[in-house]
Length: 314
Image (cartoon, rainbow, N blue to C red):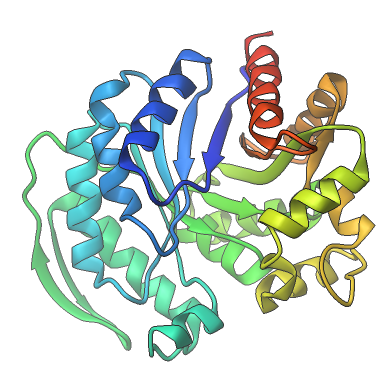
């Protein structure tokens, strides 16, 4: 079986950096590059601009919040990025989180039904170039005509069983950030399959996304998590996922158990083993976010990427 290993970076400021990351990631043998979405540049536009410095690398966003963008606008952007990248763009979407949407003044109301209608509209526009949709949340009649734009896959962010079933029924893949391997195996994968079966279709790809670090020192990983990943234990959806996975949660920050469950770390053999466990749990693609540790995080990160490149080429 071919190992599909990709990288995800939290770059949100520099378009020059994105183009450099994309060219380097392709040269290092990875299958794809993913960007997150935060409070910087538009990641869809950033990835479109990386299209002309790559030729084989898949370019994806994980994930764009749905509430602030009308589905027709999201489809327009995705089709444009697909044209700019020669059909290598992948669109990841999700409802985000209530505290973030509250910052925007958006009511985070029934996210599952919102996403169900939203993805139906986006996928229809991308596949057929037109949509006529009358739902509870959206009433849309629209058209889309972008030349040389193969329909990009539309993937959903997945943390809990209900969203996994929706992803199985209506999306082109499940994007699972921080989900431990046993939780992928026992919760996400079966619900993804069940959702697909209910819709009389094959299950879409399951994509596991986790942070990683080249170190055997858990204390060094704790320091990195406190610096770079501090927000996640505070977010209700992630706390609920850890609780459902049976992972003890710290009162503040990351517990030892959370680190061991949701960060791939170790020496070269430890990283390879951690990646293998994710594939064994049912992942079709593993996406790692390499973080630096120790006194020289930048050098540590580059060493981590080098080791991951060696693993994907082996």
